[in-house]
Length: 184
Image (cartoon, rainbow, N blue to C red; front, side):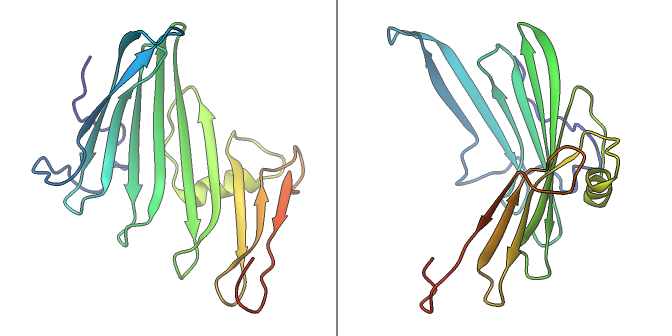
């Protein structure tokens, strides 16, 4: 099994990989156990970093005898713009892509997250993903996972999760309130 760095899409690789890594975890091995506690194999995970010490890519074995390749795209200020997981299995033979985009406000707080699960990879930037998720009627598999709202002090006050079919309503809305000391 190969664990070499590979670029899924050149638009995701905004920073070059740094092979001179010090002080970072570059690989792990996890034992797989059966119902009796006997080791049946190993799951290996390899991480690749950029010059700033941020994880660019991980390649990990999964329990379906396949591999999960995760690539992360960063903005110039270090915020995660997009992450793509390529999930491969051998039994049954299948490949799935999970794309996730994050939208931030001017202070760097997460405002919205979007997700797309598909059997083929298509590059989209965050603005395109947002437009597809908000399109009526829905024409793509991009969905809004969460929408967050903050008060004047920067405290989270509302979290909307998911979206009902054919509407703009959230599946679940969580409201947070704080006392004068800032306690929830």
